[in-house]
Amino acid sequence: MSVIVWWLVMVVMVAVHSASAGVVELNWEVEYKLRWPDCKEGIVIAINGEFPGPTIDATAGDTVIVHVTNKLSTEGVVIHWHGIRQNGTPWADGAAGVTQCPINPGETFTYNFIVDKAGTHFYHGHYGMQRSAGLYGMMIVRSPKETLQYDGEFNLLLSDWWHQGSHAQELYLSSRPMRWIGEPQSLLINGRGQFNCSLAAYFNKGGVKECKFKDNDECAPTILRVEPLKVYRLRIASTTALASLNLAVEGHQLEVVEADGNYVAPFTVNDIDMYSGETYSVLLRTHNPTPSRKYWISVGVRGRKPNTTQALTVLHYADAPEYEHLPYPPPVTPRWDDYDRSKSFSKKIFAAKGYPPPPEKSDEQLFLLNTQNLMDKYTKWAINNVSLSVPATPYIGTIRYGLKTLNYQKPPGKEIVEDYDITKPPVNPNTTKGNGIYSFQLGRVVDVILQNSNVLNGRGSEIHPWHLHGHDFWVLGYGEGKFRLGVDEKTYNLNNPPLRNTVALYPYGWTALRFVTDNPGVWFFHCHIEPHLHMGMGVVFAEGVDQIAKMDIPNEVLGCGLTREFLMNRGRH
Image (tube, rainbow, N blue to C red; front, top):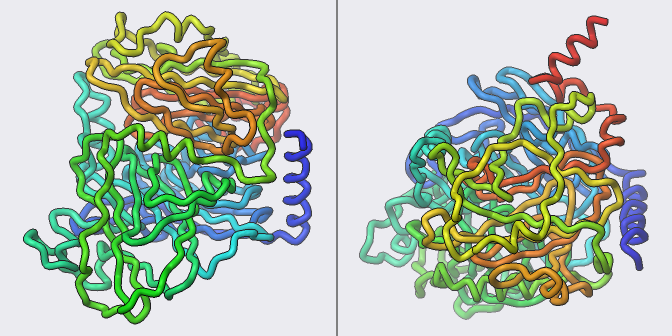
């Protein structure tokens, strides 16, 4: 089955369901609240008083309408629907400065879109560093004809937490010299964690300070209560601002069945690695312990030297004593810098049967070199020596009304990678600030080669999880060192690569992906680590510029910057 035919089949399936599709309509108020995420009081961004925000539960083909009222008295807000492709509604993607203006304090904006693809997704703030402040929640889109068989399900939303507020973090990262925010104080499972105490001690009476909380305390762990000899689907999403994570369930294996809303060929592991922006579904099969007991669920830091204790909760079998201490310690998180182990997990992920292979050849190649640089002594992240600065006028409005303020970049050639020594600090550390945009015609097959390199001080290379809005892409492969044009393409998996919307770029290596420009709009492509995006690590793709210019974009999307002035002047005539 060709790619085009497969996409048409998918569209027809959604259309058939849409004939009887429902509407999920919600009213949200977004405001700051005092909460105790990790047993220490802090300020969070809550939705209708909830932290994390309420879970959206819909069925593929449904229309989701969310009326968002901004009650943050001094700043704007937007919501990005992570994993939803927004076909036909690019202005509802929720990326400030790209697809819409921020919602002003006191104002209400309505997101109205169709959830066209079943899977495990989530939503989060995409203005400033509001995701670091807790603006996120789960979004489950169910299939009208689910093929997976299971007896129950749980949602696990994983995040990291700082005691320093997100505004202070933004200021530190934008200072000269840059002041690094450090590692998070806590890891959270469904918004709950424990700082300065040990949950393990609470259950095991260890030699460290015990966590003492009541069942109704905001930081008390969410217990997963299960029956023996059943199958449970764990829907897991990582909305961390910085940390890469590893999740394990003591005494149980996990069968991976879904990644980023796409089914994968099932495979079984003892634990899974997760990067910011990724989602998974795993099947957990319970056994029949005698006597019935409880088991640890542990989440620890990977990819960075951890200075954050594990997040812990419990898999609680029916009939297990309520207050009995767990007999064994929690699973130990694998060594943080065992990158071979991380890559091994990524390379086990293949598309499930029935998914189309990618087109055999690409029409265009785009090389994106990830570097850390300086700009007037400010530390920045840059792509092809340009540090992204999103403009005040949303890209989609500039294109729609032909304001001619955009700089359309030509995809840089192979020399960008070939002339750069990725093992050393940059010879010329200086970068420039830009808001350029890569433009593609519709129907093009584009290869993106992400190339990692050394950091500014020459002491390592970091993991970067890259997320593409508005699309899924095929992950063609990973490689060590510098990409070799004409050689490494021969290693691509063109048979059954997984479809993803987020992919890891490993230290001193490259990652190749392929996508089809089949969704007219303006789409963010960026590192999903919040500080890295804040410091310029992203690019913007425009598809079908001629079609964007004809779109009926709601005026309330564009009430800022030059588009606001343009619309006001047009209204006077």
